[in-house]
Length: 426
Image 1 (cartoon, helix red, strand yellow):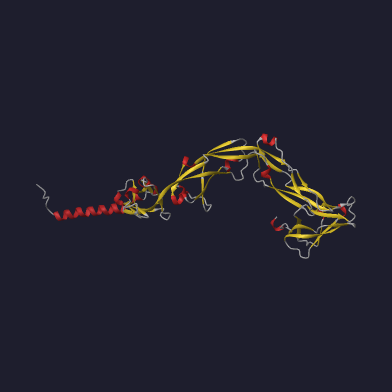
Image 2 (spheres, rainbow, N blue to C red):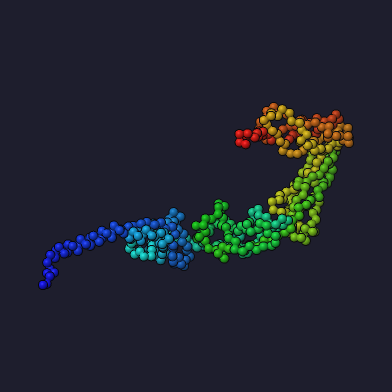
């Protein structure tokens, strides 16, 4: 007996539709379709050669450094995606026009396993500027800060190879460059022989003396990829060098030369072994003709040194020669500050002298200082108001009969609170 397949056709169709709806509901409840946004901060510009042939380069707007990509798909697939799975590119050949400013380049995003129609980008265009491409040459300055080679050695010279570099980039950016340098401080510490440092990186400083950011650096192209070699040559150091200082002429009538001093007394130089062995410096004289007061002369040490020698790093180039001139029968004595009697200092304060000695310019009334004894000198310090701080104060000097001071005497002091141990903290 045959079954009637055409019986209850509407009911059968309805059953199929209900089955499909149930299947769709189950599928969407279990794995629904969702849309998720991703931030892409590295949109790649491709086909830059398209504008390079026009003598131009691309610079991106600083404010447009990221785009948002929206992907639609099954939840289990979309939720496994990260920004690194998405690639966003802007094709210069797809720009509607390169004559506008800014130039708008369409952005295309792709993701493995996702159909193009399920990917949307916002904004849809990348805003860029086209600038004239220029090349400029800069000398390379080598710096080493305060780095020190091994003891007894000094860096004689630092030479970059190459000594200059060509930089190519957008005209506005290259025009901002003030200097190009390479810092080798960390490579010089403690070295004990001539050294070549390879692959040192260049640092670019703009006209505001700021270092170019990594974003700005990405637009620049350098010879040798911005790498240079630096050769450091070392010299030996001598630290006992003295200038033979004297004077010419005669002081005013009734005055004599008490002493000739130099500050500093000795200084350090670095040089080749041969130059150090043959070092001889000319005498430096001060003209005191007709003078009745001390005479000072400033000497530039670097100008006195022969070829093959230089002052050690950190040394002052200035040397002061002082010729002390006093009336006849006078002399300068050094009096220890520890022998100064301090009067009236409160118990909660303490005093320290900034120098170990003070100068006393003493004259004998009869012109004979042979019997003068420094131990017979009295020195005292007193103040009306004692407060914390630094001061230059007068010192009262008492001399034996028959002697007098040629100048008032002062001393620099520092007053501070007495620190007590806090017993509660022990």
